[in-house]
Structure formats: structure tokens, C-alpha cells
Amino acid sequence: MAGSLEFIKSTSGTNVASIDVTDCFSDKYDVYKITLTKWHNPSGDSNALLRLIDSGGSVISDNEYDNAQLALRSYNTYPQDQATNTSNMGTMAYTPLNQTYNVGAVIYIFNPYDNSSFTFLKVQNANRHSSGLLAFKGIAVHKVAEQITGFNLYSSQSATQDVEAKVYGVK
Amino acid sequence: MAGSLIKIDEEIVSSAVASVTLGGTDWDSSYDVYMVRINNVLPATDTVNFRLRFTVSGSADDSSNYDRAFKNLRGDTTFGNTSSTNADHINIGGLGTTGQEMSNAILYLFNFNNASEYSFCTLEATTRNDQSHLRGFQGGAVLTVAQATDGVNFSMDSGNIDSGTFVLYGLKK
Image 1 (tube, rainbow over the protein chains, first blue to last red):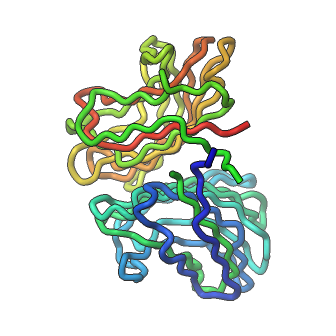
Image 2 (image 1 turned 30 degrees about the vertical axis):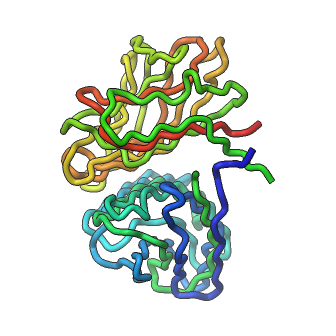
């Protein structure tokens, strides 16, 4: 029997300022699963932040997002972070300074292609920090009803990155 | 190659219904773990709580035996801890009828086919509540009765489910 988790595309980049994963959302699925397994940053500690790409191929960088994240740390307390009317959907992964540790992130995106609905996201990830384990649980919403066709990952430090991500449709 | 996430049941609500059941007569007991995904779930009545129950022989179990514990992520203010014991349902968040106050979530179901164990679920939701604030319960719940269960039932605590997509999958052994 055919399964209901269908591979759509893989993307990777080396030494890139950001990466656009385009044309991965369509009317074939309502819900998408994204795995992010590499987020290397040679020039500084870096959060992988996510923005959506509209049907015209433009990265949405306006303050149209709300997000909320809980950080779970093996070495310290669990800080929380929340934002309204901000320019991204929060941290999808993290890498410390000058390290090439791989990361593990699973992201779900709901209703991106439906132009009558907001797009929602949830993420869970686990990453190495210089002091131990750093994990995030997060949620976000893009508060404009428009058709979304892809997403963009970029560094919180405006640094170049090595990136590896895969996109699946949940049928 | 065949995949390992197998669709068992799907309900798409396009006109209002009192509740949605996944499983029941469509339940396939050949899996140990199940996944449920819901998206675009909107209530017909403003300012209501979205609730979940497990089913026994296809009917929602409304006995006062549900415990839950969630971290409530909030986009506009401090996060909360939400818990309850011996409730007759699992409250999975407030919803409304204005401003895309909808629920989207992924759940996993455990021990549903084991009559000598409790039935558990995990839930991760990303929603907008009845004040149009970003919310997301992250946690788990249990029905503290050692019995076999055969599905999940979604409803609002007042009024109908106006729209939404509900899908049940089995994770192949």
C-alpha cells in the first residue's frame, strides 16, 4: 500500500547567505513536513530563521508573523521567547560558533497553499550548544491569507551557511 | 517502495457537524502507534473550547477519566502550564469565529489496542485563540481506564465544528 508521507524535494547549499526552497507547496497537500539536518556556520553562532515565499517568488520579510518558542537546555533553565508582528517564524535550528555539528529539526507547515487561510507552523529541534544540548519547541503563524509556495532559511547573524533540508507532503 | 505512514480514515468538514470521529468502524487495529493530523479546524460558535475524547466501540468515552498536561506556548505573553485530572474530555484549546481562529495539530496515539493498558496521546498544536492570539498546546493526555480504544472524537464545548480536515494514519510495524 502506498504511504501517506510523500517526498517532494531536497535542497542543500554550501556557503550560502540564505537558501530559498521554492515551489514545494501545492494544492496536492494541506500539511508539509520538513526535515533540517545541516546548519553549519563557520563564522559565528547562528539561529536558522524561517520566512515564507509567496506565489510571486518573493520572500515575505514584512512584519506579518507571530511566533513563540520554548528553549530546552541541558545546561541551564528553559527560557521562552515570543513575538508579534515580527519578520520571521522563529528558530528552526541552531549551531554554535565555528562548529560544523549537524542539527535535527522537524517542521510542520499547515495550509500554505490555501489563499484563504493563514499559514501555521510548528517546529521541534535538537542542537549542540557549546555548553550542552539546546532544543526548541516553537509555533508560528503568518497572518495574511495568501498563497505560499515555498520557504526561505537564513542566519540570524547574516552569515553564510551550509544547509540541508528535505520537504515531504502529508497526504 | 511502499510507505510506512498509512492513511486509515479521513473526514473533511465543509458544513457544520456536532463532532468528528476518526476510527470507530474504520479503525484498523494492526498498528501499535497512530498519527492524527488536523488542519483548518474552525468552530461555528465564537469563543469555544476544542475538545478531544477517545472512542470505545465507536462512541466517545465521556467518563471523567482524562488527565492532561500541556505547556501553552503564547505569541503575545508569558507561556502557561495547563493541566487537568479526571475530566470528561481533553481540552485542546480555545477557538473563535473571527480572524482565522483555527486549530492545526499533530497527535500520536499509543496503546489504543491494548485492553490492559491506558490509552495515551501526545499533541502539538499551533492555533489562534478566540482573541486572535497565537497559541499552541504541547504535551500529552491519558484516559486512565485499562481498556481498548478505537479512535478519537473531536467536538466543541458549545456549538458545531464548522470546517476542518481530520486524518488518521497508522505507523506501519
